[in-house]
Length: 425
Ligand code: SF4
Ligand code: SF4
Image 1 (cartoon, rainbow, N blue to C red):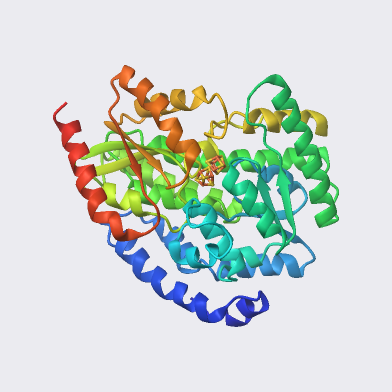
Image 2: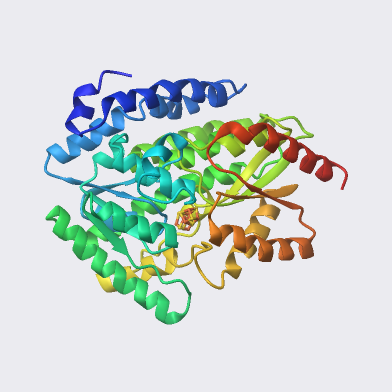
């Protein structure tokens, strides 16, 4: 990586602490990712993005701001990229996926807070993430209680805006979210000084739909008996989708998929035939949280799909581009976003339908239900999901694990036992 110290300093980054983070990541990445055999050539681009994770993209954000434009950061798949792009605001996904940020986070939120929220608060408050410090605005949402309270803490530190997400899916909730999008549009106009017109929204709906199509293409390739790409690599691509330049991301993902198409025609798989095909379902995995996938794929399993926010919930279903007025576009956006089946909704029956559908489409052998510790919505929802999966005869096991690698050995033992059950069915 080139020398970005001056840039980081200009962003008020704690250079000493940040150096510690930069030291561990390459080794960690190399062990988990570069050690894989027979990776597609198209992964070179994504390797480069990781090697430049706090460099090249941060420089692009800086250039964008120097040209008088704005950058915002968000934490959830309910924050619509379409409106940000229409105001020429770059939106970067900020969920933090390492326990490196926990000590700083625990100075502000209780120790028994979900790792994702704790890391996000720590990254901002400790000034150790250049993405947070490149943002002119942070955008939160009222999904879970941990997040709601964290926004109040971050609000003291930075410009913070919160989108009110309804927690039910009645007609009036769709209308309320549509109204909320209008308020968000006004906020973005204030922030950027740019007017958001229906034409601009139309263009950005098209662009974001293209990004969704590229991800869907990648995921569809994982439905083949011969798996052309590992679950770890697919997860990394989804994670990068949250902060890379959308046009470049679409191009590079489609180029990779061309190569994967070729592999599928040649019946070329990165796993042996007896590998157990696993659907992972649950809470999001933010960069660099690759732990569960790594353990699964080094214990006789292959992850064939993620029913998570760093997976299918991020790209499934398109926004209709039929609307000609902003009012129609808010409705179309609300229809697509309110269709996401996050455990913050009650009831949330659509999620289990998604799990069953994806399990079948991806020819999975079993489901690993993943929750981060202290995530009440997802861990409580497990009971209902398990009951329905049992009725369908779909094997499922729940894994609750945080970011620390201490329990990796224990997880491996549990997963190996689960794969043995799958083998003997
Ligand atoms: S799990 Fe729910 S709250 Fe978390 S990122 Fe996904 S949609 Fe947002
Ligand atoms: S993982 Fe659970 S507790 Fe954590 S932010 Fe997401 S919904 Fe909230």
